[in-house]
Length: 287
Ligand SMILES: NC(=O)c1ccc[n+]([C@@H]2O[C@H](COP(=O)([O-])OP(=O)(O)OC[C@H]3O[C@@H](n4cnc5c(N)ncnc54)[C@H](OP(=O)(O)O)[C@@H]3O)[C@@H](O)[C@H]2O)c1
Image (cartoon, rainbow, N blue to C red; front, side):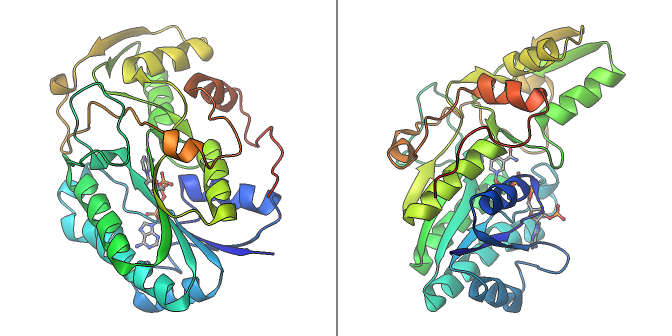
């Protein structure tokens, strides 16, 4: 049986991945703060030597705070990832690393594939891109998977933020000029396990199927929950945030589709399940 180490395994994605990996019969070891700190070389060595497959979900993910906590963000998202790559190479293991649509700053409406030039608009995005590059330079056996607009049961995400706001305010404004694919962490986990089973290498984009703007997502969530609110659309420029967000996060997922053993669900199908309280997958795991 393969042993899998999940770094950042108590975060939003890591929690679902650990659950799914266990139900697929894998031997799972979870590493996270405070006992595991990816910026400590000895912690990296210990985690890498504990398993055959390592999945790095650990990251500094406070996108706006990153604009002021620059060193910490870079240490976790870039420098530590390079060190992780070197340890994985030295020990002859296989790594899956998670990255983000924030490496892009595209203004068109084209579907972005893995060869499209990155252009991060934020410090968080720059550090995630540097992490990808340092990992590549380490020459370890690895796949980097860029995901976007993820939501899951653990932690804060755009669904929990919207529902919190809806509980407090009768009128809500949501940006309508950012387009992407809201993606359930259960679906991401399933894709990661497919990659792990094949030990696929390279750069991949993964998201749910279909594209939508954030205003339309908010409308879908409120309608699904039967919450009657006055919802209107605004521009990102109406609500400037410390970190700029990309307006185009349409992923072309045709590369990863060739590896997956399932059809990527439409964003609204998975979100409807999530909103109904489904937390475990309704598919068979054949690994
Ligand atoms: N959420 C999204 O919309 C999104 C979109 C695109 C890509 N991603 C990427 O997906 C991956 C997983 O993110 P997520 O959504 O699961 O984020 P998350 O919930 O913030 O999980 C990240 C985990 O890493 C831990 N961590 C932070 N600093 C660490 C350190 N120095 N050493 C060890 N662990 C550390 C965090 O612990 P604390 O909570 O204690 O800090 C947390 O448990 C990340 O690579 C992220 O960049 C996320």
